[in-house]
Image 1 (tube, helix red, strand yellow):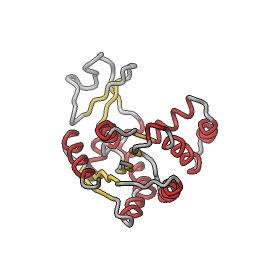
Image 2 (cartoon, helix red, strand yellow):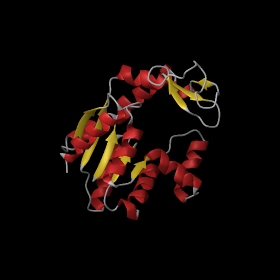
Image 3 (cartoon, one colour):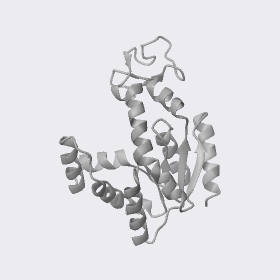
Length: 217
């Protein structure tokens, strides 16, 4: 299957993408991994992306699209793939359609993980991370440490990362609503969108997603 996974920050896309990719025996292709791999391997695209990032600028769509194209052409993606974090906007979605058409391929489904905004803020803003190298993660509501502010594993100090603050999370949600959410309507017009609730236990969400995708096969 060829799947695009969408949803707001905090909906659990990374966790579900990994689980679904393993179940479906297809590679999980995330934008973050693409950037890290190309930069660490010092590919031409990686060097180009890094030049924009070092200058504090956004990496242009064409660079991201070229990275995705290269990854989708790898042998392990012949039987399908799961895209996570790409496409991020309608222009990228259009470019992906053109790319797939050129390769005589098509998407099977766009899985939309839905979660209320207040829940997303609660999930992210409640995270606390250990300052030590282990970087164990806890949550003030869902996974409390035995002692407030102290890592259960190594005794290190727990802190809230700057990008996990409520103000930052709400800004990220604004960007999602403005830039990424419109691709849901774009794909709905093609009859590809399957929406499921991202609420509940991780296993429950995975089972929900698997059942929804089975109907699309």
